[in-house]
Length: 70
Image 1: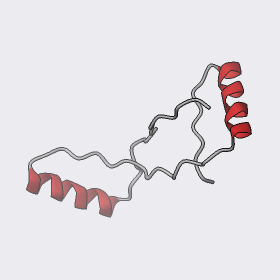
Image 2 (image 1 turned 135 degrees about the horizontal axis):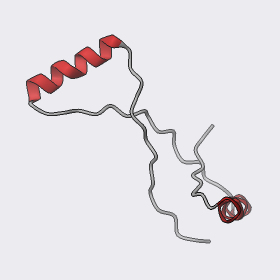
Image 3 (image 1 turned 45 degrees about the horizontal axis):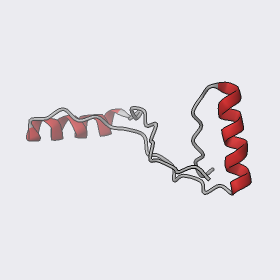
Image 4 (image 1 turned 90 degrees about the horizontal axis):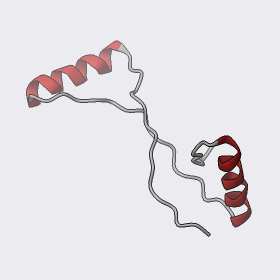
C-alpha cells in the first residue's frame, strides 16, 4: 500500500457580515491580516480495495483525489 501524505484542499470560507466584522476587529487589534478557511472534513480511512480504486481513478483522470468522511 502506498504511503499516505497530509494534503488539505481548503478554500476561503463564505461568511456572513457579522463574523467578517469580528474578524476585521481582531485583525485591527492584532495588526495582522487573517484569512478564514472552510473547515475540512476528516479523511476517510479506505480499505486496500478502496485505495486501489482511487488510484485507478487518479490515473484515468490525471487528478489527485482525496477521500473525506461524508
